[in-house]
Image (cartoon, rainbow, N blue to C red; front, side):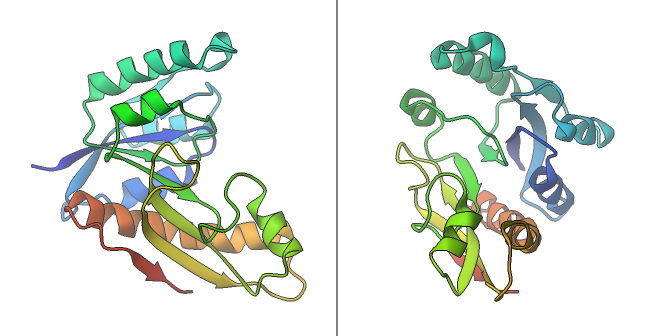
Length: 198
């Protein structure tokens, strides 16, 4: 029986699309829900076009009350009964209680070679640090920000005249390779880390 995957997004959903495209007949998992915290997220219509159940739990009415927002998230997730939750550009910080509820089932992709550059503005920080390489990481989600067990990393060279947008554009290509590759292994019960190069 295939594992059930819920994908959480906040925007255009390009990583969600990469994950879904890879979930073919040979894949050990299937998408059962795309959930966004913003009603105008482009990824919702992309999920709709693919026939994937999708829902929005708008965070704005819950301003200042993450527990109430996450209670609504949990309701939507429990209806879909996922075995795995993939955070794919989901731009909300989750409480320890929510993370504990889904511990061992939740993955995230982060645009840096963790443990370097946890948090935001990773491309800018990599350039300011004079890095020769940059990359992305898929990891299990724990209570430590961008600190869970690493399941895969992809690395790209930093070119001499790179801008933040140059790095982001080139790295996104690698994100779309790495996340599906990790999910395929994770859904099959294999947590062995992988490394991808351009």
